[in-house]
Structure formats: C-alpha cells, structure tokens
Amino acid sequence: MSEESRLREQICLLAKSMFDRGLTGGSTGNISARTADGGLLVSPTGTSFGRLDPARLSRFDAEGRLVDGDKPTKEMPLHAAFYDTRSTAGAVVHLHSCHSVALSMMSDVDPDNFLPPLTPYGIMKLGKVKLLPFFMPGDPAMGEAVRGLAGKRSAVMLANHGPVVAGKDVEAACNAIEELEDTARLAMMTRGMHPRGLSEADVTRLVTQFDVEWDV
Image (tube, rainbow, N blue to C red; front, side, top):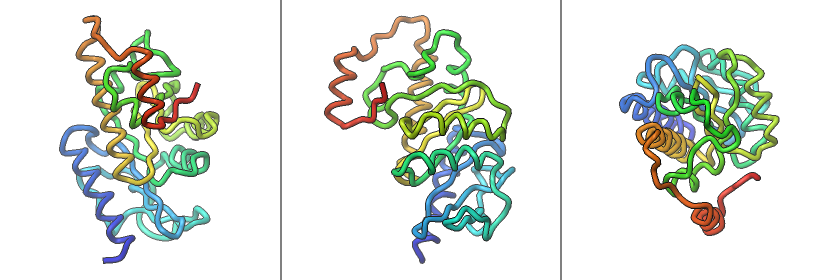
C-alpha cells in the first residue's frame, strides 16, 4: 500500500471513530491532511464522517488545484488559512461537537482563552483556544479571521458552530480536537459548581515543561 493510500485509509478510520462516538453527526464536520508531495486530501462536501470513501476524497495538488475526487467541503478557506499561516500544520479537523458549541454560547467565556484550565491535557495539546464570532457556514471570512491570528493559534472555536484544530498530522489533530471537546464537556458538567481548576502557577509550569505554544 502506498503512503497516500495509507493516509486516505487513516483519514476515513479516524473520522468514522469520531462519528461513531457522537463527536459530530449527520453530514457535519470536515477533515484534511497534507500529502507527501505538498498537496491535500480533503473530505468531500455533504459527506458523513461515518461513511467517507478513501477513493473519493478530494485531492488537491501542491498548487491548490483540485485534481481528483469529489467536490471538497465548502469550508476550504478555513482549512487553507491554517495551512498558509502555520508551517507545522499537517492536518486540520473541524467538528460540530455539542459540548464545545454549548460552551461557546455562554456569555462569560473568555474569547482569548476559550477553555478553562481544568486539566493539563487541554493546555498541552491545544494551547490557548481563540473564540471567533459567528459566521455563516462556508463564509470565507472564517478563513480571514484565522489568518488574522498570524499562525499563533493551533485551535479556534467558531461560536455557535464548532471547533477547528490544526495538528502536525491527522492523528495529532484528531487527538487535540477530542481533548477540546472533553474539556468543554467538563466545563459544562461543572458549570455553576465552582470546580477547582489549575492555578496560574500550574499553567505556567505546564507551558514551560511541555514547550506549549502560549500566545500572550
């Protein structure tokens, strides 16, 4: 099996795993990954994470031209913004995960640091998550908002919509976005209960010890 064939299979396997566990439903969400030649494999528009076909993934060449497969997701400007601004981005995942969306609707969340510091792994895998305002689905302005961050964030939360995470490869991106949803779920479960989170000193130690990108 070629390297690209393995990547196609991995994309579909990880997407189905997230679908099967209710992290995104119906035909929501999209996923992309860099190929060895600098191109992209992207989930097609209107497809379900539970039923992606490796042979029908949208294939872009290194110049950004669609060369094979089905029509890509309408959120391509969002994916392209991460690839263009983060040299380390090897994959991008976008979900419509319920708890993170619910948290984005709360009026008291910090737009610059969306996730509360409840566990070390949310910090280690994501750094600070930027809460972006609501955009119409497919609006190129989402990509422009990501570009405006100048590559300083690996994860954003689209208000009333869903999280988007870039990682070094497709497995890392999927692991990180699952951590984002888990942290949001903890935040919603403990909301109003005054949970004991991590202290500022704890966060500082994590950022230093694990070399976390922590945009200030």
